[in-house]
Image (cartoon, rainbow, N blue to C red; front, side, top):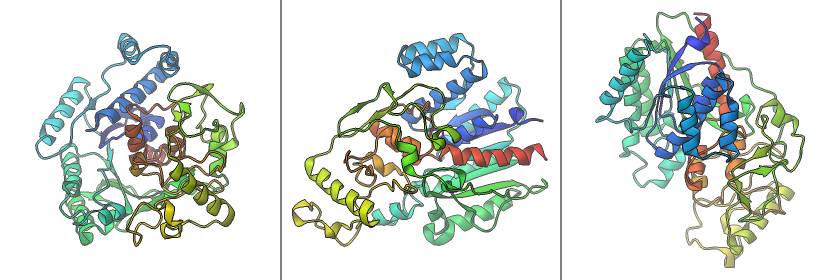
Length: 422
């Protein structure tokens, strides 16, 4: 059996960062399950991109990307080419819906004459487990219903009995509810007949070539009877920096740029953009549009950028001149304003970037703004031909919640190796 025959069920898909890694390794998706309607549009667009690529009809996607045809025309042409149903299920996974979703997946398998699912992948929304989320919630997220989403994930494993599962989440899962969730997950997965690493397998996206410090738990489990071992991942040498990622995009003042097509500022991409396939053949880039900022924020941005670029120090909120302060609480959240490290790796892109951009300031003192959707997507290692659908706020949320595609690709490659050598 080759990887093109390996079947995947994709839970809590989001915009498809984890999904993209498995697409690149030739896996066949049975279904993608996602509750957010705008993320579903992104998933649909990208899954059609891969279907068109397989049929050697990338020209149809190119026409949509370059805005020569509308979304309706794009979807119509894809239907005309008999690309088939992409299996996206736009539903929340909860106690009320999970049985219906399971039955829908089973019907789809029957219609496509697919006998089994080889791997289940996904990561439930992490806000209930994250240290930041718990710090902001007066109940420390103990009453958040997202705490129990891992139980629904386990229900799908019990129903479909895949050879392998991949469960991704934030390291805060280990300590959530005093470690109760982590212990319960391990106990229940063992009870279902699966083995996984007892030591929390925490990985950094930077080890996969992503120019970002982003740590995640990556559970890879397999049926007890399989002769598998947890894969070994060899870190990629960190020889690139954020400037290698951003310096071919046009400089923007706040409010400048466009959702539509722009040329690149430099014709030849950096070695990083070529080697990691961020710029991958199109002559134009989209979704490079800067937010509008008020002048007080821009004054703060200048101070923050200068302090970081000149001293390699982060400005703490109490250090601001009094006339620039708008918050009475100065004893917590010292780093309300944070510049992306142009000479190294970025800090983790998270969904909070959708709020105001203060925590993701562009390192260029001449631009004095927060990063654009395309810059955030690049830091997450999304290629330039990957369109994020929806409103600008939604785009930022989708990017911040995603698994970096380069990280996903590296993990999927090792899982493919495991299955091929079964």
